[in-house]
Amino acid sequence: MKRMKKLQGLVAATITPMTPDGQINLPVIRQYVDYLIKEQNVKNVFVNGTTGEGLSLSIQERKQLAEEWMCQGKDKLDHVIIHVGALSLPESQELARHAAAIGANGIAVIAPFFFKPTNKDELVAFLQKVAAEAPAVPFYYYHIPPLTGVKIRVEELLEGIKTRIPTFQGVKFSDTDLLDLAQCISKNETEQLEFLYGVDEQLLGALAIGADGAVGSTYNYLGRKTNLMLQAFAKPDLALAQKYQFLTGEFLNFVIKLGFGVAQTKAVMTFVSGIPMGPPRLPLVDASEEFIIKAKAKLDSIVWPDGD
Image (cartoon, rainbow, N blue to C red; front, side, top):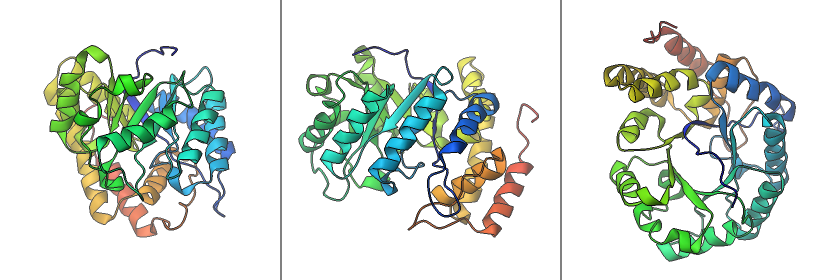
């Protein structure tokens, strides 16, 4: 396996832009890439995941999006990780082969969540079958039990994982169980695995126990602020890092109470960036005008430590 430079820092969980009639809007992605780099200082992306409505897209749409992100990100982005998880093993394998063919820097797989694996061996067997289709591509497990209902602890999953999946590179850890994450990091120091945290409002806690970075939706529009938090933590200036985390949390706490999901994330990204993200795909429905007005007013009211 070709070893890429370490994946660390912020990774934007990309939104899938759509036209008003619900088709994927590929021409917007060039502008999107430039916005992430220039305005948010984010140079890594995670494509076709939860934020990208990956499981609501057709296989062909997922391939087209992966190709466009690879094309527009060429010589600009550091890492393009393609989520290839699906409920169907053959479809997930097909997406893995495609990601390898277009030169993706990594692939990630969510646990199947209709017919669920009930123990570690069943989950690893599924992941191994997908990873084997892209034998030269770093492989990441996408752990998100609040959505999948698959609550197999990652600490357990990682025991002997490299013998089953030689390309295993790390975990997108989207759960609030910091004990599990801490045990993963503590027990796998010699493996050089990458642990990327996926609960944006708790990132500082994950950094404190050794997370390498983060994958999240807020880094699409709060990437620059979160990078300043990472810089403060590295100094270390914990008080300053806390200020950034508290303010991010203040915004998220506000919008979560209004009802906050992928549709609302699309709306926030649209008004912050000026790039039209369009509607979500059914069964999700558009954010309300009331939500947009309140969320924008809240974000505009926040006074960040850097004065912006």
